[in-house]
Image (cartoon, rainbow, N blue to C red; front, side):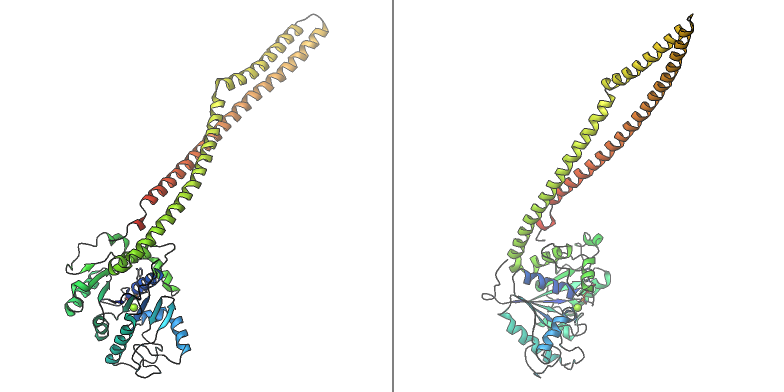
Amino acid sequence: MSEPSVETSEASITCFVSPKGGSGKTVVCAGLASILSSLGFKVLMIDADEATSGMTMLYLRSVLARKRQGDYPSSLYDVGKDGLSRSAELTHLGDLLDLAPAAYATAVMKNDAIGVASDRLSATIANARKRYDYVLIDAEAGGDPRAIMALNHADEVVVVSEWDPISAQGTVRLQQALPDLLAPEKTWILYNKVLPEFIGAIGDSFLEVVRYLSPVPWDADVVRSLMRSELAVNLEAPNTHTLALMRTIDAVFPGARPAVEAWRGELRDKNHSEIASQIGSIEKKISAVESALSRTTSEVVSRNSPGAAINAIGRIAIMAAGVLALLVASLVGLFGSSLIESLVGGAAALIGAVLAIVTLTYVRRRADSERRKMRDLGVQQDVLRTKLYELMETRDKLRVADLQDPRIRGSQ
Ligand SMILES: Nc1ncnc2c1ncn2[C@@H]1O[C@H](COP(=O)(O)OP(=O)(O)O)[C@@H](O)[C@H]1O
Ligand SMILES: [Mg+2]
């Protein structure tokens, strides 16, 4: 993480505007501010949107806590206890992140005079220039006087727009209405909430005089997080939204690029070692499945081997020989001359018959159980092979993911 460059340079003022409300100015502006401060830069966010005060609402809990500390502090759009105090009072959101809210009391917006708000904005920015690395202004939608007031203070402008014909027309009209404030050399166009299937289509666009940023995809994480008044920004385990905003930082805040690259490097190393350990544990599973498969296969082979067949035939042959011997004995006995011989012959015939039945039953049962066993072994082999292919596929995907880590792709 880099050291804040507060001592050495002045903050740049970046203003976020949009042709119409709901384009995601607040989400993008707050997301970028949060990332920049996490990367070690000192950041001030200014909510200049009186109409919706989205940024103030997002941090309402902190704003109200700040309000309770002093009795009714001043902000851009309400007068506050100091009457015409020149600068807006700030709410601290973190060590390196502050907010100048649109108002501390939404019900008391007495200060309609755009001149006073503009003076307060100027004073707030003048105070911030040397104290912060970046000042981000969340402006009002459209081109009304309050949006113009914010634009008048901007070094750079990001027009946040949705990617549909109405928003695109709105962007063109905004640019035509404010050619100086949205001069091409200081204006970026950022398409936000772009459905993933359209991301690739953006590029051959209608406005050629302005600079385009890598689009920010529509992301359910953003909506879910906002339900909890949170941002979908996570530097530890970055999601698509965080990665998209990092690409915006690459372009709009070049001074932060080394810090972003350092973060990417750390992430790649961490990601690489996590993937390596996942691959390691998958490889252990692969070798366990491989040895189970080879045990099953050798059992199949041994059951199919000539030795096993000879053993089985041998056992049956011995029993058959016994039956035959008893049959011969019974014939000899039955046709013998004495009563004893006949009795012995009869007994031999009886035992022979029983042995014959036992032999036949044994042969049938053995054949059945052998068939069942071979079928089970076949199923087991199939299951193990499928498992093996799945594991190998997962391992290969992880290897590819390691090589193609999207975090490696930084600048646009
Ligand atoms: N990248 C995004 N993906 C999904 N939804 C988004 C995204 N950006 C913004 N939104 C949604 O759009 C709504 C409007 O965003 P917001 O930042 O308040 O717009 P604006 O400040 O321009 O009026 C948010 O409530 C959020 O649900
Ligand atoms: Mg807003």
